[in-house]
Image (cartoon, rainbow, N blue to C red):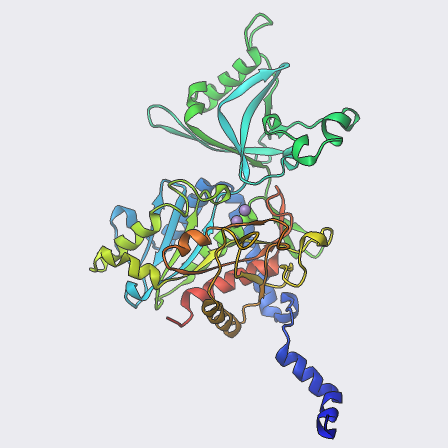
Length: 478
Ligand code: MN
Ligand code: MN
């Protein structure tokens, strides 16, 4: 080593400069933002919590998204209306918001696609029964839940009952402080040793025991058959005009009762049910509502059925996206046959959450590549499990572009993967959009207690997710 280079190596300032220039340094959002942006982070969380409270199911989310869009002048594309800003509501469970760009559609779309379904307990078709003078509803859980988290807690019932004459009755019980709530019973610890404590967690809690307690008053006298269930049915008829058979054509979802809350004395965190994936749906909505006269046509998609593998006609595997592109092409005077060219030139964010590093369970995370709460929106190059099975693996060229636009716009972001390689894994809608040739990557905030009835997110990451989506819609680039 020459004298000059040795001197260089010992120079503290020079080393610091080298480190700054060469190494990745995780950036805590709170360290990076000025006072104005700190205020913006806190204000954003207030609107977000309101959305969470209004949109606990996919149907409620679609309704609220459409309400906001209509208020902002979006017209109904499905009804043949034409305008620079439009929406497409499909079956009340999936919705798309579109803002037309200056460039032709064949130059590609900018798509942010989130999902608005969350894990929950759905009612069975014959849900109502009485046992031991108590009335219950049978459920079938939807999505990945840890069953024990649903016991002994206040629950609400949201959804719709379709009568044979086509009339719809909407229910939302358990959210107003004046409302009753429901609950799934749990066993007292004194008697739980053999039935629960000595079993594996996966076996100790059975799906057939996730029955929701809804009443205990009888009708008539002790000779009246099924008088507890009968009283409940009478109540349902008196209050909603529905009979037992109507429950066969219903979609009633049992969800945790109560509003989103701030967590911590410093109020830096939000806890609520359904942040997977409303923490992405809300910023997608907020971002597209703010897009004005973009270069590329922008699309925000809010899908159903992600939590059960994106099957079904309201999922990301459905033909909805192709239909919307064909309609837009037709309205622009182009051939709907150009649909494939439009999609192959498009860029997308699969807007979904990541699991944050949990200090109590470091063993499931690979800490160098784990998402950290407070370090901004995640960019997840690939998902899947095992040897990248079922993964969407975003192209490096695409990631390079995203890094550039985020850095230029001051979006604080982190590159993060879900858990250790052999630990498990998961998928998102990314791979179902990728098959159309769209450039796509998973991106969203990290969550703690993901898929629980009370998921935790950092207000800083929530805001950076919004900033990322807003930047993505309008950033220059092919
Ligand atoms: Mn998700
Ligand atoms: Mn999920």
